[in-house]
Image (cartoon, rainbow, N blue to C red; front, side, top):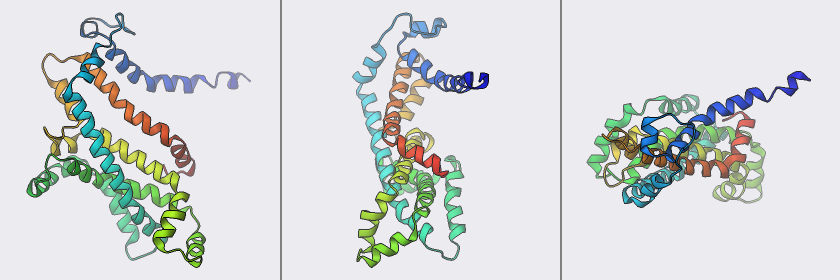
Length: 268
């Protein structure tokens, strides 16, 4: 009885530990720079929304948010679209070197982003793609496609092969079967894969900073540049950082059930 009565303490402390940085960021965004830099306070002594007003009122901040959302959305769509047929092939067919190829795909996810920054920079500069949304989106595919393939292959392997055979007997072509029958069965996997592709692309800094400059500067580069400048406006920086949490929170809200199912299946 005593053990059950106090069982909530450990998860409560764990959640408190995880939420502390987020709370501190939000609290800083509601403080003045004087309060942030001169004294330690657990909550804003003088509540202010001026930091958010500066972010929303500055065209440069609106531009970097739009740029990040653009290339992240492009990357998510491309990564999932490419990973679907690849995952189906790994799930349904056996061919020479299939396991080695599957492992090689995952090694791209293991490699540091710095390894590919220079090759991507030279390649995109030669083809005139430097400082474009599609350049960053395609570069992030190197890391996100293997992850999406790995996630989707697990969900596809859980669908009985008899469903494929039955659909062909009923007269479905492969595109018709894949879109109308198979994809709804793995909707949870598609949601989980899209979530992780979105989040990895949203928070990635090095590749985005190397391939995007003035025209499509991402939010991560803008935050880094502001934090390194002399006379940093910490309140504005905290407000912008708080706003970067919103897209991820929205995505989590829409795919929360899919993520829970992915963890239950042991593939996430």
